[in-house]
Image (cartoon, rainbow, N blue to C red; front, side):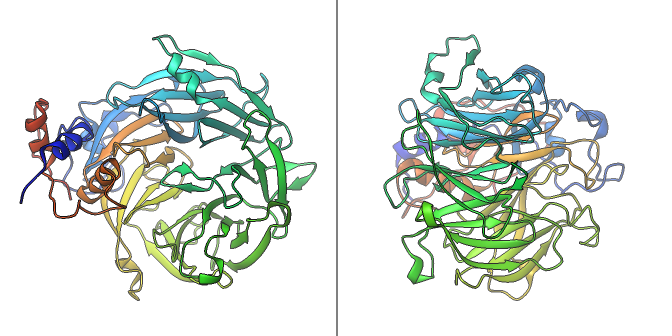
Length: 484
């Protein structure tokens, strides 16, 4: 089949430096067993240092690209992260929260990341285990829970001033109308914030306790990032831990075009119409069966299903020792229906997950990053709903149900590289060697649609791209795995 040379060169440029992974042939099991986690290779708990020469031993269909340790960022423990692509330069940045501040890391060359800038907390005493960045336009917003901090707003175009010395940023403004936020939500498509149906731009603060009250959803108008304004609040269903906000375009026709929040309220999934910020209303709610703590989730591309995680069902013995990913049918927003759960082979705690095209990308604490291909969600057998196709284990000590390892991931860079924030190990950059996932982002680069192959075209494997682009391959110590 004919291949356009220009498209091949674009593919080569975004092939993650195209050196093939030296991957294990099997999914890892428990530490100490025959398929253990190579305890002598990466580290034993605490700060995790990944040796690039042996990283393949913790990898399945994933290429390890680089690591920025917490010490290199400025210390503390790792927390959440988000990403930003500079619309002027197309440089990619990972924005990572730490207990002691926020780091801004240029990952355009994912094998040589640069700590471009750091932002201190709003006060010297405002250190916290929960530091949550999100991006709207060219501004990053950082919320914190556990201490009074406010929401910092930082102009990301200042990162263009980097000349080789890490910049010490100062927040352009700190919004104090919300002092504590456990997480921040944005109306995003492909990780990029969208303008709301009313023509304004918002961030949505979830959770936190202020004035003795555990908070729900608070909408903050950031159309003018220099002067954020509290636009409204929703408290009718109690505490909200996290949410996904979308301009709805799913199967429930009467709500198409409205701004909808899918909120995770500890024991329920709660659907909220947030179009009118001054009068946000609950559309539907459903309790999760056998719930530990309904934590976070993401819609499928067609917005018919919601995929979610529970942060305490494993540790509380509710899952027979296995990690569970939960599925909801939300085709009727006023009547969400719990479909069931997919059982993993491991028993780690699942944390944040996202959906990109037909793929679910999870960060599951001690198991690290795990990528699944979605199956037919109408099939009555839940074990057909997902198939593990790639993983990278960031935590060497064990696969136990503990709060160590991978916290969050950002799978929305058009390069096809994925950033992982690790509590112990800092920022870890990887590249899933999954053909459909990389095709998805290639199509985004070429402007040819939402996923799948470019119409009427095919693309070569990364090794072929490397030869075309003149990029040398690293020496292989183990057999090469083709992209799945």
